[in-house]
Length: 143
Image (cartoon, rainbow, N blue to C red; front, side, top):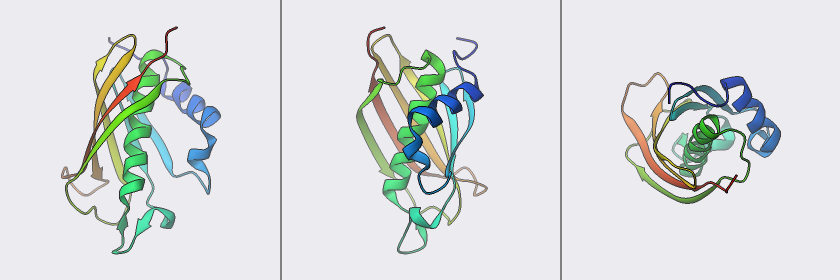
């Protein structure tokens, strides 16, 4: 696959239209890129995502990873709102520096009924050290 089915703008529009709740309280998730079998998403470190110890919380990183993988799938298969998460696994590797996080999602398998991917979350501007690694499986409904 040399291109995506949806452009970056089309993927953003679909996510905003179908999942407005992800931006409740102010825009925090920013889809920055889509690519064949991939996507990059930024999470702004709003106060609502922080936990004691002045770091981004685990649940915020989990939502970021899930949302980034979903965006990668949509960009590559088209606007299928009912593609759903069936499994997620997270490894929290180190405490991220206070600030924005970047999620690089990569699809390892993209079939007609199943997608499997991984996400590497790093601190934006904080080097290449992965703070969280996630894997996920998604069920794609029949067309």
